[in-house]
Amino acid sequence: MLPDTLHELPREERFAYAKLLAYMIQIDDEVTIDEMTVFEQRLGTALLSPGQRKQVRTYLKNPPTLEECLDELGETSGRLALRDAALMTAADGSIDEKEQIALEAIANHLNLGEGIIDSLLDWVMAGFDWMQDGLDLLNVE
Amino acid sequence: MSGMLPDAIDMLSPMEKEVYIELLTIVANSDGALVREEMAALEAFMGRALLKPEVRAETRKKLRQTGDLEELLQRSSIDTLKVALRDSVLLAAADGEYHPAEVLVLERIAEAAGVSIDGLDELYDWVTEGWHWLAKGRNVVDMRIAGDELLTDE
Image (cartoon, rainbow over all chains, first blue to last red; front, side, top):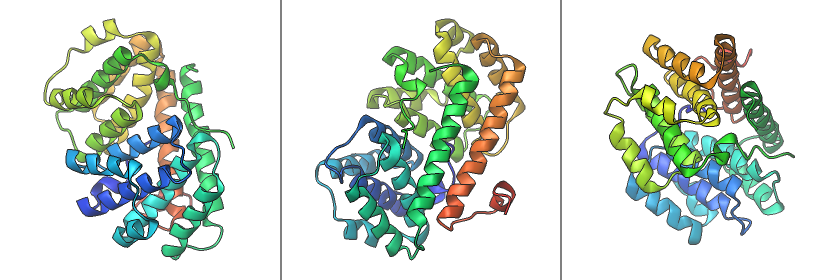
């Protein structure tokens, strides 16, 4: 995935973004390798300091509350976090009820309209297809 | 819903992943300027490959050095070269343009991987499609940036 605007945000906002992803990845009590690879990818894009990365990884075992995460997010970081939370939670092939409820709560917090989660999941599926096209071009499985 | 993963990167051995990321650092270094977008992309690729922290630290040190492309190509399997080529094109595009020096390195990796110039052109087109996809994602969350109107046809 190409970097877009995340790396341009202030350090505190990038940290808040990563904190929300850490909250989301453990919400269904199961961290799959598929979700972890997206999480680590997005953590890399956030260009966090080594200390911040270490702190974010502690949230996988001792998660913050959703309210705490939302309070620290700005307008832009919140929207990017919602988008990438959808990408990450769908990476294992399914979105369970807890994940769906949390995504909707984030969207509500950001005053985004109804149907946003369905639109995001459509976008995620288009991204999966795009990734597959890249593999097909190179004839690698 | 079908999942995105596994990606071909997951099929590489730890040693192949190190070669893969070294190839990416050569591409990142090839135009003589490592901008923040490229750094973010490189960190993302290291994260996606689930590289060990010590390998990532070593990679960051190599960012200021000139690697030996030919030596790396000789050490690479075809699959490693293909995955590295795909992600190198993404990396080179990260700052919004392909520098001539980056293109030369990409063409050399493609040649070593057995990918034709036409195949490489298809990869460039694929990256452009990725930019469109990203812009659509920003559009969904109502967070457009300058130029997105050209990518989303809206």
